Amino acid sequence: MTEPRRILHADVVIAGSGPGGATMARELSRKGKTVILCEAGKYQTRFGYSPFLLSMLDGFGLTFSKEGTWVMRPKTAGGASVVYCGTAVRPPAWLKDRYGIDLSEEVDELYEEIPIQPLPDSRIGPATRQIMRAAQDMGLDWKPIDKWIRADKCRQNCGLCALGCPTGAKWTAREFIEEARRNGMELLLRTKVDRVLTENGKAVGVRARDPRGWIDIHADTVILSAGGQGTPPILQRSGIHDAGQGFFCDPLCFVAAPIDGQGSFFDVPMSAGVNLVDDGIMMTDQGLPPLMYTSLLGLNGPRGWVSLPKVLKYKKTLSIMIKVRDGLNGRINKDESFSKPLDNDTWWKLNKGAALAEEILTKAGADRNGLVKTSVVASHPGGTVRIGELLDKNCQTQIRNCYCMDTTIIPEPWGLPPTVTVVAMAKRLAKHLTVAAEAKVAAKGAA
Ligand SMILES: Cc1cc2nc3c(=O)[nH]c(=O)nc-3n(C[C@H](O)[C@H](O)[C@H](O)COP(=O)(O)OP(=O)(O)OC[C@H]3O[C@@H](n4cnc5c(N)ncnc54)[C@H](O)[C@@H]3O)c2cc1C
Image 1 (cartoon, helix red, strand yellow):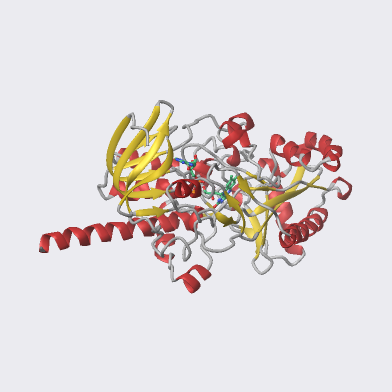
Image 2 (image 1 turned 45 degrees about the vertical axis):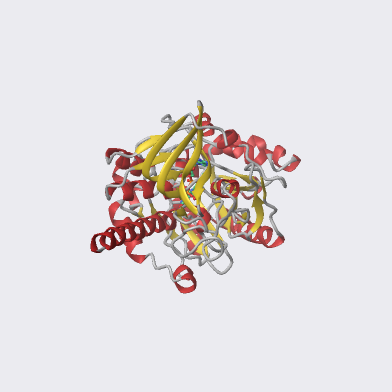
């Protein structure tokens, strides 16, 4: 290996500053650990417009599988949480039932400290209400959803959550990054972790690259939090070749139609919805910013191009998002390219959700002749380094002292907003590492 330009030392080194990495940094720096957090992206601060959003996405958003499946990959300090919709869903019961992982304590802690809760009536916009009423009239359990949003800071008729919240109402992982920095953590931006450094099967740090060359960061504990698509290539380059075999991405599409009145674009996205657990379909209100709307129609081929003029009416459009639980097929490669075919079952779910959404929108008063269904995009890649296969219950890899903590760890197909689970899992791992370190010190003292 080439000689590094710089060598740094810390107790803990973390790759990736999304919700998983930022939580690890915050929790461990609170306990007095010296932490270095490496983030491949920059720390962009201009929010609220689509061009700024593109600058926070890997490849300006153009990240497609070899089969053409569009999987978005945010690359910025704070990871995907900077552009997420701030929807919170508690971990499913099967995580405890099938894997013995009980996150109730950590989830309760989190709900209290952010705080996470549904929006009050005053922040639920008119389009969201219109959709909710129609869905409820059809007998669906469509209701307000928990949000990582502080209602007192949230601006009425803003709807810019997914373009980076301009008021700071939405929690993002940057809040934990900043807290960790105040605790002494060092944040290295534009620093991409390449591989884990090992000695006798044990992690001793990472090799990373910044714009000026290679850096070795020596540490007793290595945490890989580079996201569903970022962590597997690091493990593959470190000798764990099975990482990245199979993953879910929770594909989604939108059904939209014009109305006579204010559309979904101005409301907090995903304020209310329904989770059809048995079908693996989640549906919510969600407005479409014009650039996203154009791209999703454009990718529909000639059928979508005919509908493109409808984008001009985006401010007067009701829209519903349909997100589904897909299978664990596909692969992430060492060079970060990926394969993700969507199987028949996934298309069946998307079509079933879309048909239901058409009915809801029509009942809500939208123009039936103006209905459009967009092409598919995915934004939750995960399950690439699964607990029970490549990780033990504490998320340790076969390289001792090297842990994964991001959406990669999720052991089964998912279909839900994953951030609560990732942050709660990170809190759990931080507790485990703290207890293990204290036990080691006590044992040394006794000897
Ligand atoms: C548009 C959109 C809307 C979403 N809405 C919701 C929602 O409402 N609710 C919800 O729960 N979830 C939502 N999600 C998903 C959620 O944001 C992610 O699942 C969550 O952020 C995953 O956290 P993570 O810790 O796995 O890492 P990520 O957020 O994926 O962050 C990983 C970080 O690692 C960095 N990185 C990658 N490779 C390297 C490397 N080699 N070295 C150093 N750094 C590296 C990346 O730049 C990135 O910053 C949404 C996602 C998108 C894109």
